[in-house]
Image (cartoon, rainbow, N blue to C red; front, side, top):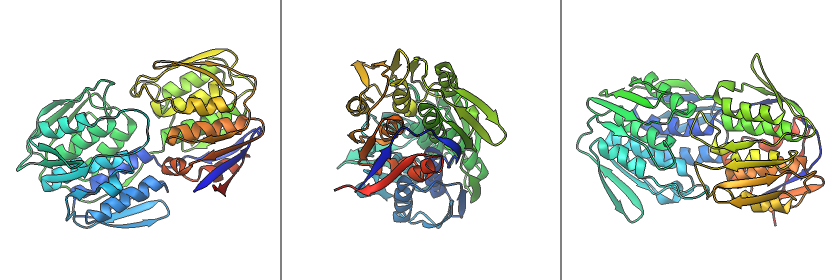
Amino acid sequence: MEKLIIEGGRRLEGSVRISGAKNAALPIMAASLLTNETCTIKNVPALSDIDTMIKILKNLGLSAEKQSGTLILSGSCGKTKASYDLVSTMRASVCVLGPLLGKNRRAEVSFPGGCVIGPRPIDLHLKGIEALGAKIEIKSGYIIAKAKRLKGARIYLGGHFGSSVLATANTMMAAVLAEGVTVIENSACEPEIVDLANFLISMGARIEGQSTPTIKIKGVKKLHGAVHSVIPDRVETGTYMMAGIITGGDVFLKDARPDYIIALIDKLTECGAKIKELPGGLRVQGKKRMKPVAVTTLPYPGFPTDMQAQAMSVLCLADGISVITEKIFPERFIHISELSRMGARIMLEGPHAIIEGVKRLSGARVMASDLRASAALVLAGLAARGKTEISRIYHLDRGYEKLDKKLRGIGASIWREKDK
């Protein structure tokens, strides 16, 4: 086990390259199960979640060769069971359900694990593939899906908190090899879904309407191999934007895509940050004190839930009272207690976090509870006076490529030590 040590109070300046999107790469990797031909995926980030997905795909019969951001997947998927030992560690691993069913007409996938951020049921996943003709059985902690044939259908994927990215991905991957036409209504519109759809199209799938709430899929008999480059990570982009802002810095984010984070840019500009689109990326400038704002997380293109914790760290140092309303995962507030240890003043009222800005945060020993909460504690540590120690940083390694190295490159005093 390792921990991060941060000596706060340094202004960040310089350039950071944004890595490929984890949440796009994982479903794209799973989609390679749909063909017996070679798939070459570029701009794949070096993350523990990527390594977990590679192990799952190897366990299912594929071979994987990874070299400097490029992943080559080949072979035939000879198995249909994704085991508990791997799937339980990462929620996104459930996205092998759709391609396994689509290719082999049978899938056995353990219930997924991942970050503890509140209930995340998989009912929409099951609804989608069931509508295509699969029979579902839950047995001994496994989802067992079987179908003699899959047939296109009109499917509504509306959930209690809106659309579901992974449910849309699973349904889309199962439908590309189904007979006839599938229409997914209330589909997720996230850039990661568009990237998956574009990869499937490059494999020979016939998909229309990606990036809209209605996706239309005409089933084909067979898919072939493809070469594809993963989009830049919008959550990593947002995290480094806030690192620059919370330290009053001046940071250029190379390869950032501003069209993916319009709602975030809007709120950070309202806070007082200067954000300018330049050739090849974004320049972000903070100032000593930010303005308070009201933030509500919503499905894309709204303010992303994956940026809620990081935004809270920034608003802890704003001049006045801010309110964050979490409408995607109403229980995603575990980081509040750790920020409070650093001097933050936050009151929780149901899905609303009321944040009273303070003059300064103080370094402290804190513990990460999930991936994005870990990033929030790093941001707080960068701005805090004194030393911050963050334990359980394996969460960070799941979703941020070389975070400490990238931050050191723009002036942060941050390093790793063994956690006793």
